[in-house]
Amino acid sequence: MLIVAWEVTAACNLSCGYCRASASFQPDPDELSTKEALSFLGSIVPLQPMVILSGGEPLLRPDIFLIARHATSLGLRVSLASNGTTLTPQVADEIKASGISRVSISLDAADPEKHDQIRGPGSFEAAMQGIESLRGKVDFQINNTLTSRNESDVLAIFDLAQRVGACALHFFFMVATGRGQEDDLISPERQEELLLEIDRERARRPFEVQVTCAPQYARIARPGRGHVGGCLAGRNFVFVSRKGDVYPCGYFPLKVGNIREKNFIDIWENAPQLLSLRERTLKGKCGRCSYASICGGCRARAYAETGDFLEADPSCLLVV
Image (cartoon, rainbow, N blue to C red; front, side, top):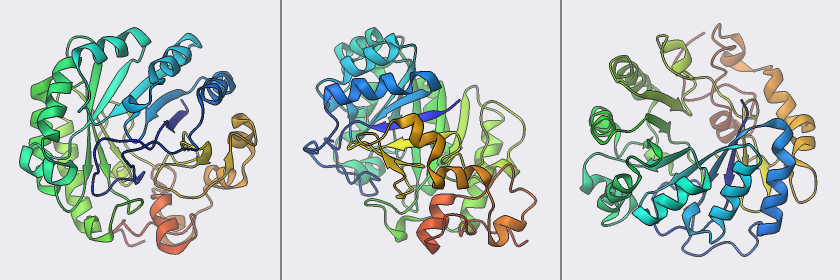
């Protein structure tokens, strides 16, 4: 299934240190209008993708539930990515009524102080209250972005996700885009250790576990629930910005088109960069690697490091 992650707004009530979107307290004046948003949803129906409403903080967009209801009325599966801090029981009721099938809540640590150092004072407690508001109404998952600041918290995040009743736990290995800094990155050696730790825990937990932006997990993971690695950028995943720009993924700043200028399906099916990502004629050690078909390396990291998205992934420690 194609996944379309749509950054519906730049507005956010938090200011996280590594924010991909470099979100601000105010919306971008050039964000897609309600009319443009509804038209965009109609244009993607033939592909029947899953749509992730993201941001910023999507709940700060005034027409977010109008957008969600329209999407679900078209038969699209819709999820919402939130920091959880603005979620009240009333908002949870609106989420359920709009047809949104899952909400992801971002938690950067199981320790309130550590989480708040990254996202702002009081944000952990507010997110936990948001989770409580969702409980029994809408399925929710925990999203955890792994950086050098919280890499020791993996086991604690597993425990927290299980304790609060999350249906899934998704780990994101940070890519240095937006406000993300090189100092926040995890070394290839440490990434490998964390992937092994995640896989051990995944085998014994009662919920879905996924890893994003560490495609090397595909060669490590034992058979189990859900997708287990490999770079999806431009292949099964695409990112649409608040202004309608289309990118292979949110961490991959290579614009391949704009939905204000061209139909999304035309961009998806014909953009040369996306076709190249699907052909996967990789260079360097990624091109020589026997795991290329299931892993493929992180194309965003290759692009950030070399300017060539087909080059080797610098976060992989394999020597081939």
